[in-house]
Length: 250
Ligand SMILES: [Zn+2]
Image (cartoon, rainbow, N blue to C red; front, side):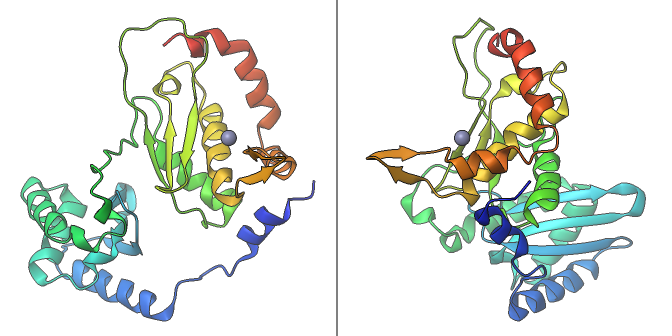
């Protein structure tokens, strides 16, 4: 069960690998946000994500908040850190408006926004499956949290019909964007199957696409060997075979 070199390299990279100045910026921002909060513990990770400027994971039982914030927030003034605190802890609508204006005013800082592409709308919470959760778990379990991608459900589309094929997942290299087909956000689709599709797309960030005999090779031998490391690989394959019709009818 040898992992390919690419995956091993991803895994063995230093574990707490943030630069000291980034760690300081994160700590400082954490403290400034916490100062506006009655209770609760906040951990801040600064990111360079192009689409998701703020994402919050709430662990209500422990009053714990894990927040991923774009670097534009590193030097935020007290008005903004207070809005962050209210948004994080209470999902406060007014705070959300303040933060929206701040993000609009700072979009020049967002890497790649110069291309003026329309901001992608990211939907991670589906009706039945939360992609962010699935992605985070896989990232921790298989990739030592080294994958840096945005994940979203694809667009909803028209009336259900039987299709000849669907693209269950895709990965756009430039945008680091994983898109998962809405067909998978249904009650009969088990979580491990969604996770398998997400895992496959995450692997595309690990394995560069090589050119072989003049053709781009998306799934190299090494890629497929890593894919088979997924704990429920055989089960997922089996499930797919026996539910293909249902999956294609969407
Ligand atoms: Zn693929």
